[in-house]
Length: 418
Length: 153
Image (cartoon, rainbow over all chains, first blue to last red; front, top):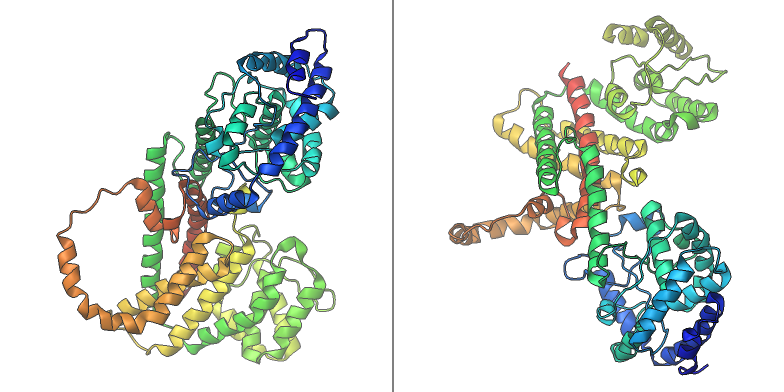
């Protein structure tokens, strides 16, 4: 289809929305093919690598090309999800009138979800999204006809869009040479691509986009909301601001006593104070530990015994995951250690969560006799474990164990310590 | 998102273990009897470094701040000897530097200083790292507190 034909078709009011879209789509494909031949991928990958290394936001706000947020690692990235997507798409060289036409089409197509068949819509979306450009390319694009879309449509079409993404060629950006062409093409800036943008932005704002889960798209499209600037720069800034505010809210929960503070500056002050106070506390505690006289070597042996116990215990500690086998093994490991150390280790049994290894007859309880360093483990590490049973039962168990091992003196020693 | 920032109990255990091992090593090396002030000071410094390093190693390389901290500790260990020799030479420079007008530090700069590895990140990443770093510091404090309590009884 030629360029000349399409405007005519679009202008004709007889055509249904669907047909118009189909026509647009075909035309677009043509454009795209032309475009692809001219795209210089190498430049783009270079740009992207630069952007990859660049971890700051500062200058790059206009960065239109965005990276998608993958479920876990993405959130840890440094600013990858700073996204703005544009879907300039090769709608083609239209003159200004095309804008209005597009507007009309987009409004009709976007509002009633039922009108446009998802399939064709998706196709157009996919094609439309392809030339996602870097900021340079899109700075001049005027975004029109942005309307908020319903969530249903969002969820509906994102899946389809996602699938199409995999098929669609993703041109990560266009070379500077193609800029002029693209700006012209962007005149048509796709309502549908905007639809996809909005969908994606809604998705990302809700939870990590399904799109990203389906496959590995490299960018998330963001759509401007109603009544807001549609500039690429402002979109990127908005996304950035939202991310920052999200993080600040999380920090507000972390820092104690920050509920009433509103505003970034106050929050930052509190955060800085809190981190400084924590560091001071570490310093103070290290001084305290340095000043404390080491006790007898007894303790050091305790520590070492504990160290050896750790490999077994460390895996045991997620309370729910414990199995009697593991505890048995751990206990057997203890048996290999010296008697005295074993006594200490027996007290370590108190850390166990309460699984009864039948053969051993040792009821492991959570409340440990506070004689050994594991006490600190109790208080700090296993806050999810609640202290339980009676002291007597513990003592009884310890005596049993001691008896099993044949050293009653050790148990006496323990008793003394308690 | 919260799951990413939470510290596993495994991390806590790893930290506690490393910390205890190094503490016991230090105790073995130290002299018995009441330590002098100077000794306390050096020991304080060492214990502090040990606690930070064990935390960083326990967290591993999954966060940027732990990576930066690990690198710093390794470099410090490596260059300690070299730095001592250079210390005397740089005293002059230090005097000269004091006359410089100190730049007004913004809050984000201060935060960057506090969080290890914060210099190379944007604000977004910095806030994330700060959150994780804060939780790690809190567990560090708790564990050390309980150890100190135990030993002081």
